[in-house]
Image 1: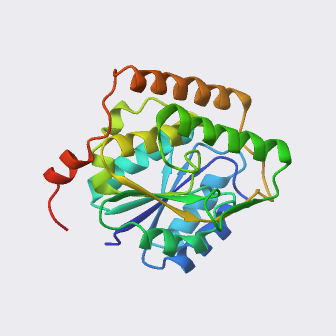
Image 2: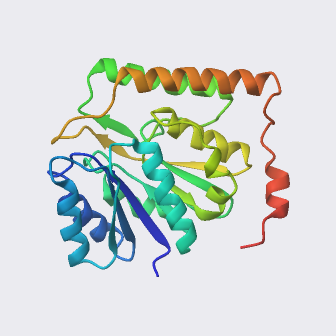
Length: 254
């Protein structure tokens, strides 16, 4: 069995999913791919089924309604952990995350690194196709996360990631509360607090060329509210500081 599971949530991605699976297969030929489709009315699920019929390393999870990115990843992670995968990837289906970056991201997932982020805001990283307003919003959001949580990550809101199974097991997925944009922040925050290192690999994030974005003002407001609450809890001692030494002491040597 492959050690790598690439998790790709979809909702109305009929124009993109075929090419994305082909590119992932080319970039990481030994990886398994799980498509999580939320009953897309444009036929994405049916296309995914045909891809799975043609490739035994592609599987499809059909969910009965649009349930959001966070629950899609959490369900896929649980299946991946139960099946025995060593690493699990988050990536969008719309082409904004280039599968060609996966080899370098997986290569950075070593030693005590529990999370690798495909980052727009480290040297070499950038965005293409974004208006100035969106660039400013993203930059300010990540700056606020660093200030509120003391999280030394340049791109905590990024959705292109490689998690190790050990790190995911250490953070209790059943208690992850976020369901929107704040999911990415919460996962990085939990990984950090569990004592794992977080690495950032530069990527070029390209705005989608087909289909519609799922971003909305409500998910941004949720991220702001949750980050503020986590920051207050952390600063007032309601949650503990990272305990990296204790985590490493309990972990078997690689």
